[in-house]
Image (tube, one colour):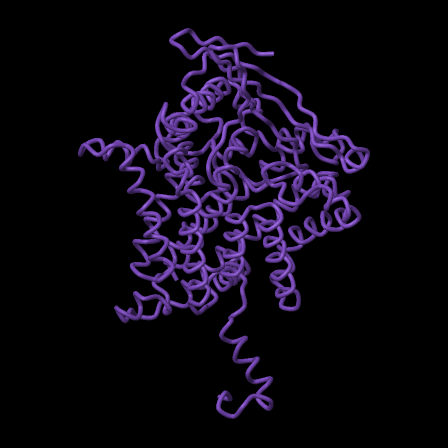
Length: 203
Length: 319
C-alpha cells in the first residue's frame, strides 16, 4: 500500500503540472482576446495566466533550481507548451523570400528548403515562430542562418535580401470570386556575403 | 476523516485497476514503428537539421542556447557532440551514430528486444533531437516524447516481446500495469479536453473557416482548394465535429456504451489529418497512444467473434 501511495502522489504532482501548463495555454488565448468570449474576461484570464505562471515557477529567477527542474521535467514528458494546436483559430502563415543578387547583375529568387516532407513541416513551424513577438530578438540571427544555408548553394551570390512576410489565405467566398493569397512583407534584411559587413533593415 | 480515507482508497482502486500487458504490447510496437519511421523520414535531412553553426539549416547551437537558458538539465545533442569531441570523434559522425542508434532502438522496440534499454535510448535520443532542434519541433515531437516517457517507465517486457520468449521473464504486476495505462489514459483526456476547449473558443471552428485555412496552407495543402470548395457545406459540420469529439473524449471514452464509437471517431479523425494534411508522424503517434490507452482487448474481441459465429464456422476452426 505504501508503494501505491507514492505512485499516486507522483501521479498527482505530474497531472497538477500538466493541468497548470494546459490551463495557462487556454488563459493566454483568452487574455489575447483571440477567442469568442467577451473581452471583459480578458483581465481575469490574464490574472489566471499570471497565477499559473508563478505556480510553474516562471516568476522565480532564471537560475532557480526549482524553476529549472520544472522546465526540464515538462520537457522530458513532452508537455512544455500545452495542447492548443490550431486553437482558437488557424492563423495565416509566413514566408521568407530570398532575393539573390549576383555580381553580373542577375537577380534570382529562392526559399529556404529541405529535402524531405517531414523536415518541411518543421521549417514551416520555424517561420511561424519567427513572427512571434517573443522571438523578435532571434529573428535576424535565424533569418541570417537561413540566408546563409541558401548562400552555400550559390556561393557566387554578392548580396541576399531576405524578405519575411505574412501570407493571408483567401476565405472560401474570396476564393470563389477568384481571389488568391496575399503576401504582406513585414521585415527585410540585406546580407552582404563577401567579407563585407552585414546590413539589416527592418520595415 | 473516514470519508477522506474511503476516497483515498477509491482513488487507489481507480489508479491500480489490474490489467493485462496487451496495451503495453500495443504501445511498444506502435512506438517502435513510430521511432523507426521518424528516423527514416528524417534520414536525408538529419545532418542538415542538427549540424552546428554554418553547416546546417539553422544552427543547432542556437536552439541549444535557448533551451539551456530555460534549464541546463534538458538533454540535447550538444552533450553527445561534446562527448564525442573528448575522444576525437567529429560532429558529423556523432550525429550519424545518434541517428543510427535511434533507428536501432526503434527496431528493437518493434521486436521487443532489449525493451527497457531500447525505450530509454529512444526516449533520450528523441528528446535530444527534439530539444536541440527546438526551433524546428512540432506537435508530433511532444507526443512522441510523452509516449516514450511512459513506455520506459512501464513494466517491460510484455509477454509478446522477444525478451520474454528468450529470457522467460516473470509476469508483471497487473496492478502496476493498470497504473501506467491509467496514467496514459488520463494524459490523453487532458490533451483532448484542452485541445477541444481551445478550438471551441475560436469562431473559425464553428463555421468551417478554420478547416479551410488549415487545409489550404502549405505544407498541408495536399488537397486542391478547387476540390475542397465542392465540399464547402461539409466544412462547418466537420469543424464542429472535431470540437465535439475532442471535448467529449474526456467523458465518452470512459463510458462502456460510447467508448468504442469515440475511439473509432478519434482514430478516424487522426487518419483524416494524416491523409489530408500529410502529417503522417502526428497521425501515427496519436493513433498508437489512443489504441494503447483505450483500445479494445483484440484477443477477447476475436474470441467473442468466434463464439458468436461458432455455428457457421467450420468445425476445425471452432474452439
